Image 1 (cartoon, rainbow, N blue to C red):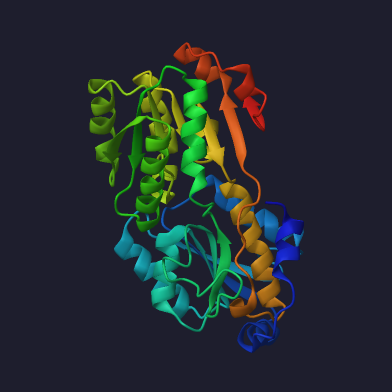
Image 2: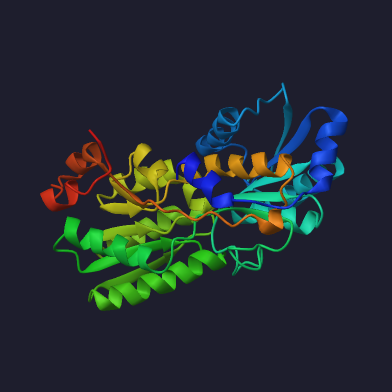
Length: 324
């Protein structure tokens, strides 16, 4: 999503005295940046978004980075630490980090970046008027996305009759998306093979099961956990010769065959617009949640060639980006 779209979306808002006062009193606003993992490439997009809005780390803002190193309990402690540091805003990437920040404070503004179903997870009262101390950008794109992903698989691999779905059962959002996929598969008369993974050690057995049960293709339902292991999943799909479609561009950049969905990088970059508004006096309660408006189809032709798969011209013509 482009920066202008986010800024236009935010609109007018009432004052948020605490953040504005803290910034004026110290001269430099302190931003807490909280992520489940130690680092993700898309995190850099947040700094780029801030820079475009005139906020420079070390000059007129200070960024305190904390993460959970892949451990939920450490993530919770990291969120509490940011609160104890009395940061002015917490930016939380993906649902686990948002929940940890939400549990740690009800007063410090929290800007979430690329989280799924913020209403269903209890982060906001509504998308138009969040109503509390949280707002930000949502990765949630509606029930039709798994159906479109399955349709793309059918078009790309016309002989596919059995499609595996790899998903994280610990994520309520992904559980809902899996149900959407089941409904879409029934409509397309596809046999769906469910493979669950909540730890990296589950990947190899899942792919072994796909081969054993003759899955013709794979869809990976993306959350922070799957995205972090995107390169591993792309390697396993290539190793086992399974055409796979993923939720966003990080996978195809890591060697995955295809991806369809919103850009996580754009959503994280868009969180900077919320920080900008809040530092200038807005309140999260009145800043509408940003949703993806553009969905990208990315195709990796190098991977297709390695799989011996010819991408149909009708699919190739719809690609927003082709990796050659």
